[in-house]
Length: 481
Ligand code: ARG
Image (cartoon, rainbow, N blue to C red; front, side, top):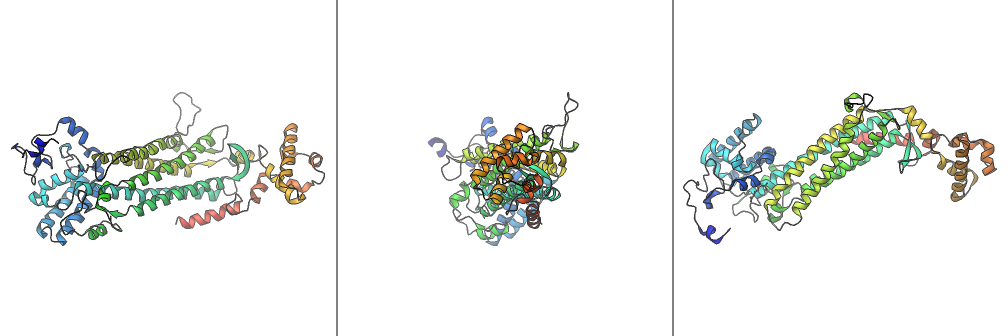
């Protein structure tokens, strides 16, 4: 802004009075004498994406107008006209006939411009004691708050699908892995319940964030608050907030509520991606642990035998967008001085995109989990392979022969080596071979060497034993009611 420009009163007769912008004139046009360059408008315009804030913008305006009337800042007649106009705008949006116009830049000015067309000059009173800075902070905060609650609900739906499968398969043996190498037998139900825990924490991150962000920025106005006798507690209450924000600068310049939601989304996406990755692995003929129905698979245009887990692959890949969204907004915010800067208009695209992606990913994952059928025989066979009960043998030596664990570990290693030489499992190693390792070993050892016995023995709290799994299933069914 040059000195000259700031000292020059508006001269262009086409520019409207500050209180009465006409068709095609910027709302802020009073001190300007020329229209913005096309490129200025192109880089400035946000209505293409912030139209999604229309419901929040209307709710905010309704609460603001009602408060202005209650505080005798505007007349009852003007307030009634404003409320009526806002209702008509709401109906126009619902009917798909509301004119979203680039020349009015964003959702806030589009609504106000339309209000003026519908009710005349009273529309100009709505922006008393308000700025687009607190307006957008409010709208966006309400949108993110709702997205957090919705996502927590979707996570619970996913958890319910997992719990249902886990209950059915609390006894279904499967190999447990470390390093993706067979480690110890677990059950399919136990494995799925691990994700129930992860998604439970994800849901709580969204609800925690929603609680923390539940303070209302409306009334901070441009940055310093308002000289009008506004009642910020009343608008906060009307809009479902716990209280008004306590610092006007913070109110208009903070977006950590969105960052926190995006961080929760990014973490959730990593969990979704891990489960997606496992579905992809389990679906391979080499594993053959599960099948998905035609509803969640696709074929190949060239290879007729193919049944591909595309939905799982896409959930895995879309995690990238979620992580990018957090980075995008963090980079927008990291260097901004207080208070509002136009950079912050760039908060919306990544946030909307992230929650759209999350919505789709959670829906697809819930569908896949409900749809999948495990191949119990195949998983049970795999559960016993790879000497997966070696730890059980070592534990038996400790318990039965009072051997130090380190010695038991060594002897078990020798047993595995011998079984490998003979091409058999540990459970099939003849007793004389066992006795060659330690003459005190008796036939009782075979009771612990099957995968079912191994799993049943893991009775510690949160362990793989079917009764433990069932206890966790019951706890979650209760929590998810
Ligand atoms: N469209 C703007 C945004 O999303 C609204 C706030 C504009 N405020 C301003 N002082 N230019 O951030």
